[in-house]
Length: 288
Image (cartoon, rainbow, N blue to C red; front, side, top):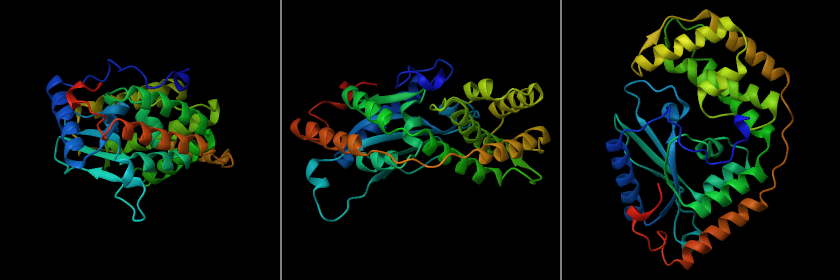
């Protein structure tokens, strides 16, 4: 089952990254480590390229997890917990501090689950990833991620229904979380990150399926800002499915954050024992 495979998934050949682009991203991540004195533990592609519905001019949404020095976590004043690089037409690069990422994971935020399951990875500290996977499995509560996806679907639905001209990407920003919520409702497991995997398993109406596939092909040829006339078959499906998913909303369960606390403390101690956030390694020697 797609929701049950071992994380992180091997890179998907359906999502190639140009070697020149990958090299630039790797250089950027190494520069982040030097400039901010942190260790990047994991980096991947998020957004439309990770989900599988990128346009020709889609940017690269690079997301990473990082840890600073141990003493920075022992101060009374809070340290900034995100690193955001200037966004341009090609690259959107930002990362979360480890404590922030684990705190959000403990609240049921699905973002970190998606990053771990991204078909495009740039960096990974193998020990950390293995421990994060184990902690994420323990902390995972399907009902929590269900509510996360349902909230996202509702938010994006407002930009689709009743609009004269709809950006292609808005349809997919609504379809993807809605189908993910539907998946969790039916299977009780993590939803696949790749959009086509969700569609193939969750959309059973052949008319709707054909309409989504056609729109997907158009999206892949269109620019990010291009619009389309409303696709009524898809809009009707969205409204109907939101109502069906909402009607069976599960109660929110509690999440045991003890494994996440242990992962935070253990990772920071390990990096501190290595002498610096980068663990004494040259960035070029770290795993892709």
